[in-house]
Length: 367
Image 1 (tube, rainbow, N blue to C red):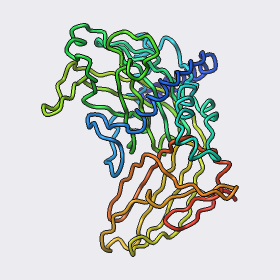
Image 2 (tube, rainbow, N blue to C red):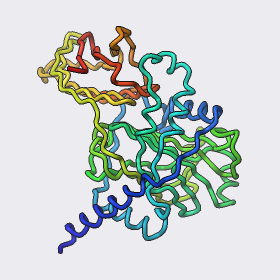
Image 3 (cartoon, helix red, strand yellow):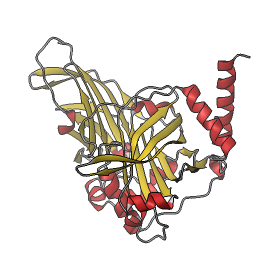
């Protein structure tokens, strides 16, 4: 048996064994009202690793540089070193559900289309529930996945007293963050937010040096499911006017297993005329937490026409109500192609949706 065949068989066996542990995992306790309020603020403006800016508007995609075989080695190493000793716990979605329910603006705006209860069935397998290495401890507390968007909550604990003293209660970050997939394709839209644990969860007891990290990963290529890793490199401190200071060099990788989840996928081939240019709407992907759109133009030698489809989007419900779609937007565009992804401020009940309106064109969502 050659190396590639053995690697594939071993990885498959490990993933199957981990998935079987999902049903035996204990439920994750729900956060308090003040905790949910802080989580909402964190997710309202997630940041790209090392940039410190809200993830909105045009963004260049990040490339995953690690193939599936390397990620399989990470899984094996975690098992052997005990970082996955707790098994594959199911992120039940209770913490994220509570967060969305506390969002009064979104709940009121989408009152006839919101469905937060469905998050309880969108759990993702948390492979690295505990990772302690290089003076840092990571705990994965909750994870959900709706077919194209994953959300992960981590607790970071800085164990080194000297490192804590250097931080001086400031918020650390990471010099480089990367999303690893088995197929090594690009993950086009992701970001994370961080805050001291005592600020994010003031009602909970916490030890010194604990921080809350909330990741949001939004990309259609996640739909196939499988292993997904979060790679963090070099703990750094960003200070205004002086750039970044590396406090602790190192690399930490946490993985989760995304369960294949069906999303609504359409190929409208509809013509949307914007700024005097015809754009062809090639694809629509709709899930409870996100909307994806792809366009191209056939007159590739025509004049430049940069635009954002996020400015003219609405959803018609079966009861006749019209909802203007709002949320965090990720847009990548060129002279000939446009790709947009919008993260909703609350999970949508897709059974209530009748049609999508894009740049003046109505796209039926159900036959």
